[in-house]
Length: 340
Image (spheres, rainbow, N blue to C red):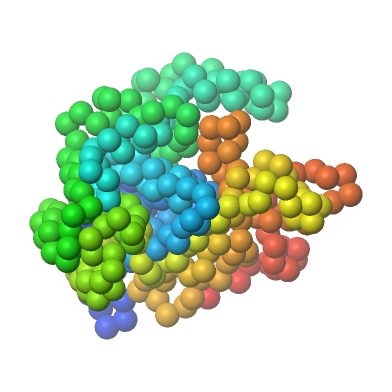
């Protein structure tokens, strides 16, 4: 997957700074430190883990588990988030009909689901429920990152009028056609002097699939990845493929008694997410995470959440989502936070 954006930049001898622009003009983009601009992964917990999302100008690889399709959860949320934000999307797939994959994308959480969720909240929040009645009168700003219902397909009105391009890589012998498609797509988002006005995403599904004609020629794949990385660097883009940010997913055995006794909430886990590397743009300071391994869970069998792995306490209570869970580092116990 990849994202790109048009931008306005000011260069200096140390780092590239971006002109601050009102966020209302840039749905789906967020400013971070050192002039870094983030685009959402489509998973709120993953955005928090990575410090804001996927940084524009970086590539991200997701290493899949051959035994389970958990990597597809990340891909679908990434694509749906871009469509909800009306960002152009290029989807490459080894299937004969890549457009069919759009029918599997999840839909953003509806107001009705949020109302139902509020009924289960603390009674002290009772007075806030009336706010949902006035949501339609707001100015219609998009959330930076939505919760997506994995059991509800994306509604057709999200797809209508969108700039969505689908490409099959099944019969590509040397990836030249895919390279040309990416190059044309990136021309929509040149890095010019000007404010960031739009963003685009590229989603490459199962790039190393054995059924693709190029799969036995490693040189073609490496050449394409290097070229893609170069194009993204020069167009202020992000690719969820390789390798400034490196993620991996793997399945959990159905009956692993030792692991079940060790971890809280084992029965609710569907897989594990490992963060091997996080991109750091316009800075030489590496990103230090509180934890690098997280459990993948489906909240109410609908919404994707990530949690820090915790050892099972005596009472067997389960942990919380990453956004509310306690830090695994010693610094959280002291209440201090060092940010160089």
